[in-house]
Length: 168
Image (cartoon, rainbow, N blue to C red; front, side, top):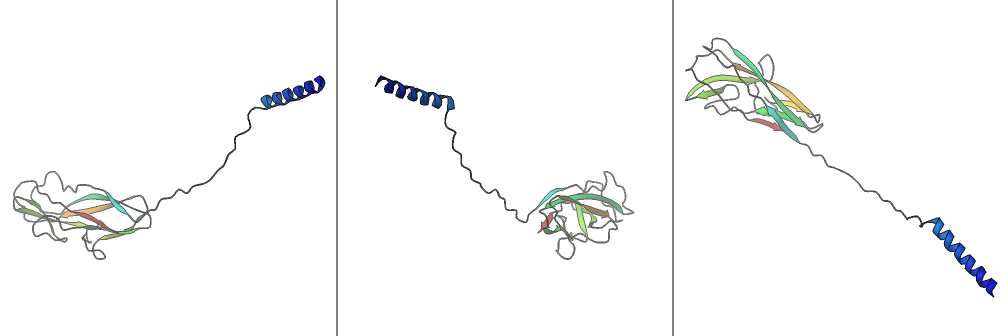
């Protein structure tokens, strides 16, 4: 009986030794997946509209004074849009003849979408706005301004404010 007990103890100790040497049982794992998404809607932003400055010092306006500025527009890729300019804040101004003012005096000027200054830039979609399609990046548009020869008002700084509208 002592031999059987010793044999049983020996087997028990051997089993315990193997369990200790084998280390802990490996951890179980499981996996899953999840969806990542975003919905892009048609959208446009006006990045900037630089000042159109006809020059720091003008004397008598006997010839055209031409200058340019730029408007930056960014629209989502494939989004069609139109850029329009209102008539400005000068009293009696139209998109064809805008008015810079100072104390009741005015200087007429116009804004054009082409370098030849033949296409007035207005705010009626399909008529006098600039149409384009977004590519997802910022797009630059040149604004061509002209102060035509005219009777020169009193010396002062004349200004106007134009509202840029992007319709998409």
